[in-house]
Image (tube, rainbow, N blue to C red; front, top):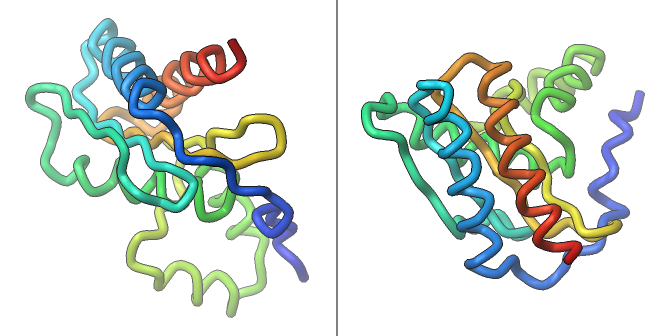
Length: 151
């Protein structure tokens, strides 16, 4: 049984600009702040390298690593992390066990891959609020960077 993960067909693009990464980061943090959520936000390039990171005052310390690991999961699979979790639930037991043992795999909502057409350019990950709220913050950052990249 295949996981049908599209990353093998995804073309890697040039790295995201710092301006684009900061826009996504700032938008996600502002969205969280508007709702009173304390989160950490990480933006990675297509190679999984950290481009931008920010943390709301009072966000729990563990969210620093989780935001980065969620973004790494999204860029590795070229999928939203919520979808990675769904696919893992449907995968054969040996596949699930192998992937779950990966120390930085976070198959829960809160991160989205960033694509420009069919090119993977990075990912944004958010941690600190509920899973649904993390997804909302990531989506706000995603929407901002998508508009920026398509201008």
